[in-house]
Amino acid sequence: MMKNIEVEYSWLKNSIIKGINQLPEHSEHYFYNKYVDIKQFEYIQMDMMHLNSDWIYKIPDFNTKTSNNEQELVTLFNNFKAEDTLINKKNILKLRSFNFPFYIWLNGSFVGFSKGFERYLEFEITNLLRPDSNELIIKVYPVIEETQNNNLILDPIMDKISESIIYSIPNLHVYNIDVVLDNKQNFNKSIITINSLLNGYSDSAVIGIYIYDKERKMILKDNVDYTNKLEKKYNLDTNYSAISFIKLLVIDDGTVVETAIKKVN
Image (cartoon, rainbow, N blue to C red; front, side, top):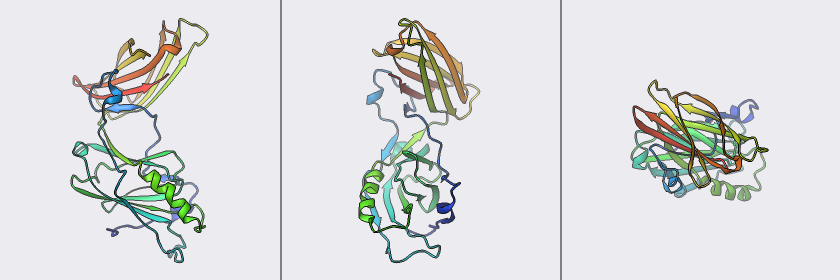
């Protein structure tokens, strides 16, 4: 299905535009929309689905160009059924960067555009994902007009598109976790600074902060009121090299709505 697919070619040549509807980059950390124990989190599956199969592609005639004198490189298609765990959730499409500009549509609706400079790219698709059949279309354009090495370009694109996933996040979500450890000169002391960005609003939620050592024994526990910008500093009677994990629990009305875990050492 290619109807309703219109490309805004001006974005390709506009040096100011890096992406449209592209979500900001965030830290790589584990997160789950329920309580997860620190000793088991690597074995728990987050709500997500892989789009690593059923990709097909269409290569245009390279002797023709659009009325805007732009040469399309390849169009990628994926028809899939959404996992039940993603339905009625806030959903994110995550792609590996192609290092080429590309446009995305889901079920005929425009999702976003990116020039593909970051390692991973994310777009929200919450209102576009259907419980039954879905069609994802990605149109990729070359950075330059040279197309004679197209076969060499297509292989890495197909490898990267196979890493695509769709995952869900709760309404209250730990978006980013930055951790700084200091006081390396004092063997028995350490200073840890935790800066975290969270999405969503609640006047009843709290954030549980937990710090663990390499054996996953708890070093510190703290609770703070929910905030979109968490900034905490702790002085610990523990060598900095022994600190290994930070866990944030987002608790709303007595229920854990998200567990976020960041590996430090």
